[in-house]
Length: 324
Ligand SMILES: *Cc1c(COP(=O)(O)O)cnc(C)c1O
Image 1: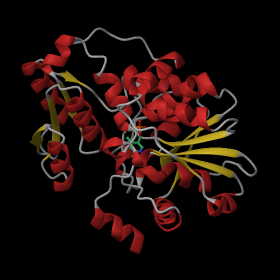
Image 2: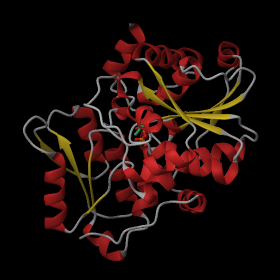
Image 3: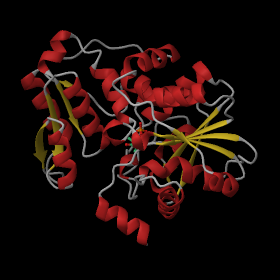
Image 4: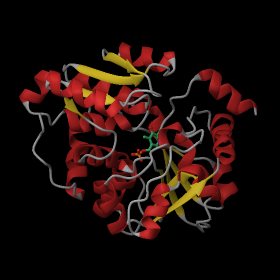
């Protein structure tokens, strides 16, 4: 079942999404750190989406999307393919809205991730990532069961939902000069740009990609969507190979800039968060801070928002990053 095409999201959609999320989502805290301010010679405001429900901002886009399903869509439920935060976000949002949910995951996904997704009430279907095509599998199941497939970024309601983290930050912290956000599929950046249009037009939104996964930077600079091979980086939530057309259009129209950071700097940022700020941040969640520190943007003396986008990391892996 193909739902009717939706118009691209506008700033007002982020404001509406924020109303829908009042209650179901946490209004996450904004932390400060004197040490970080001294280190970067700026006034930093950390929006802690690692403390969001299901551990990342992805819950915002998932809930905003599922809560606007038609009764027919609700009855048949939702399907997503992901081994990461999107899967957990969709599973939790579906449970809260009491609809069937199926997640397609690689059979070698971390057992902890699979268990967490099942705990949220999702049915998990596995596939072999070397021999099978997850999109084809997902589409076949969606068709057979009448389920609606929801991707992690290329959807107007997902983008509007992701923008609500920045919207909350702009409402709580006036006069920000910069906002740094991590970039994978670009839903978070596109939503943050719309939020800035609504509440902080003076604020420059800067996307941060892993060095090895700089497809969005290349796309922005060349003016067309650039596709890359699956990149190698510890930032597993930012391994998208390209932006989709909906996201690219928003980022190109208003998009300010995209910078990059290395895996080494991501590890240092994770360590900083653990040691100085006492918070658990996953590698992808550290992109914005590492980018603000090392991405070559002159933020000295400025008021700077940093979206800490997620905190889901396998503990054994996390311990290795901290020890290295
Ligand atoms: C998905 C994700 C991102 C990237 O968001 P996009 O909307 O795909 O650009 C960044 N950080 C975390 C923790 C994520 O889960």
